Length: 262
Ligand code: 5HY
Image (cartoon, rainbow, N blue to C red; front, top):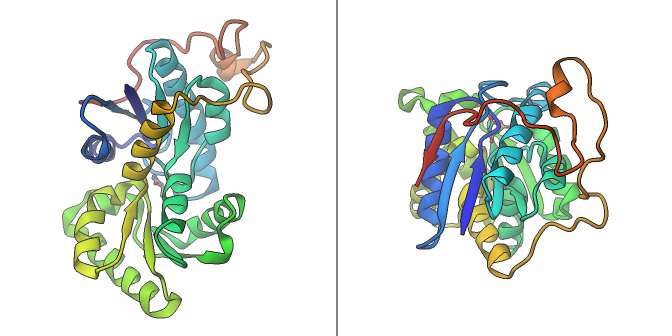
């Protein structure tokens, strides 16, 4: 099977890291490709960045459909554009927050999410409510800007670990969920060093997509995730207009942002 992981921000080094995490988690015979849009924010830190990451994300999902991908992972912990992406995809689409939070509920009673900046916390608390896990979940910020995770000398990994230790002490966390796709490379070492499950949503979502595709399950098209209705879009968004056959019109040049295929 073929899984497309979309990093909705435009930082290529993070896309590479995300692709490596997805490929490390995937089974033999599963092809994992990681891409990011060529347009949009370099990092997503709060609601405004999130909003402007969605058009580029949806273009990558539409391209993935044209290339016949079996399932998709949205590799941003805000699960950016998840519902809109599901209206375009035939196969399953998972957000890394959704996947990681559900995985945590299967491994322990209470869990804490350790994300980047405090401004991201309310959105993630809203996702915990949406996914029905709010009574078991605390969301914390490590005060690490997203792009600091791309700089080994920034001390970001140490700050994430310190916040995890506080979560265990103060929240009674039995599992930890890493609240940023850019933390994907930290999970295994933190889990080993701290002695509790530390869940990376990229890996969790990749394996869950494999399971859903392996069961022959696809996104339902009989309700809210039905294909967008054909209509005119004007101005800059003209090229996003849904066409009768499948979702938006051709979104322009092939290839989009940076791609790492394995
Ligand atoms: C993410 N931002 O996973 C989120 C995390 C956050 O650019 N990739 C981003 O801080 O909300």
